[in-house]
Image 1 (spheres, rainbow, N blue to C red):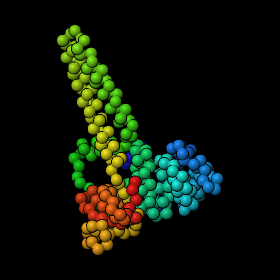
Image 2: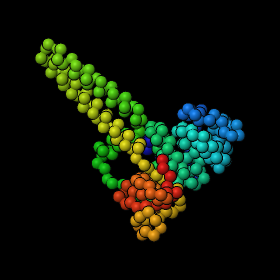
Image 3: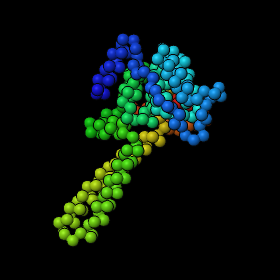
Image 4: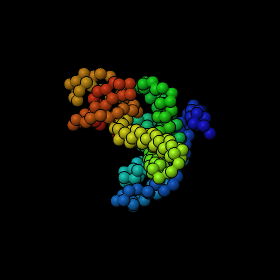
Length: 274
């Protein structure tokens, strides 16, 4: 099923009163970094919490489901399925800000997840703030959307393969007797090198995106001021769920900017970083 068809299906379910259609995902969420506790203070393992929360979600107890997934995240477990299920539970509860935050976190871990991406688009469509992003030329937009769905590890592997291949082919040029073959090998090395450079640039772009500070507005309404303090002028307002770039933090204030170029300062507690 194409991405457009999946999104249309999700929208039909929303109109019918169902909201996010995906059921809670199953599996073992305990693949956590070393040092993460294997159980909560109450003795529940991550798998037990996950199974119970998934059962609560299927039974329509979305508040309990959210608490269960939150307990797993609180243990330090950073799993795409947990963030995705938590986002769905938040969406069912009408909490758009936390839902968008968790969809973003899920996609950070699994950028190829089309369901999470479609649900994120669906949730953003319900926001009060409609921020217009700068126009992109078609090839640039396609490239950007492609890079957002391909894991950085795959791009890094492709870069290494083509880089090594380029140098390997280039190494045969000096020891090849035939002038025609040397020329063909040189062209092949150049082509492989250009592909490697392309993948390298794509990898740098992905690394920059991962390290960029992205925050989601968690408060219902936030006043964006000209400086870090209540005494500064209110420039504009943003609402729950709006996505912003987090630039600097000064004590209890954070400098943020929107894709349309607007920027200012908001209380640090009003924005949570992805």
